[in-house]
Length: 393
Image (cartoon, rainbow, N blue to C red; front, top):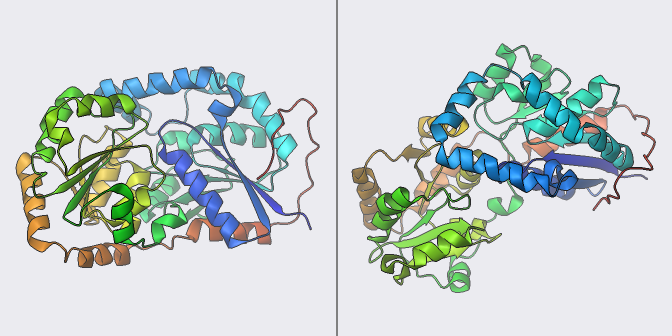
């Protein structure tokens, strides 16, 4: 019997969108042996030369001119993609995306970024008969996510659902599932083994994330990271820098970041393990990182939210009691003193945060699988002889 084919499309504007796609892919394959999945970052796949330049320009705008980014976000908040951007996507992706779909013949397409969702929606209006689900990976919804051709939206909270309904999306087309996280974030790993693996001590531990895009600018490094490192006699610091080796080498030039309890961690696919041994997370409020931390039950402190979706994410997590925005050095002092006074009893707080979550970790995959089972069998699309060679895995 032919397995159900699920195509997940994302984009490289930040890691969270693609992380959500991979998390959902793993969950779907674990939920049934009768499905196969394929995750594609559309821009990088179709335009491997141009895409890095576009992503780099986007990162520079976000990190060096956050107020400008916030202004653009708010200005377009209630609107769909403007005509110029839509024409750009059409020219860059439309025909090639159509060819990919014709070759892979998916039974359903899942988008975790608005751009591929816009492209597939246009194809559907032109006659593509493949269901389209869109997973909104933040705790807010920008106008660019919304398109009448989307069959179902999977969203993080009832508030996001209400905002979609308020913009004309039919009630039956929106389901509150939470944001999908990789199954590894639901496992509890051995703290002792993880400490041995990374050369860490059993002591109050704070994880710092947000350096992968170079958001630790000079002033932030001096005002935040240097101050955090000054506590390293009593608190172990894990500074996660992702693929940003330049930032790592810059920090290592300063003595304060070479202290025994300060650990500069490069790219790793075992953040889930490091979260298990961390008692507090200091991070920018990206939707995916915060959802993973919520799954692990780690209290959070937020710094420098980018105007727009990160501000809305920050508001949500503060309202739910999962974390606080850093407004002063005194707040850091308060939390660090709390760690020292309550370590190791802090595990009780982690359990409270985990139990407070409203949505099953499998809700996204369950909704998709139910839709596939209930959907009538659709005719396959003829494969294109000009499509690039792509394989299911």
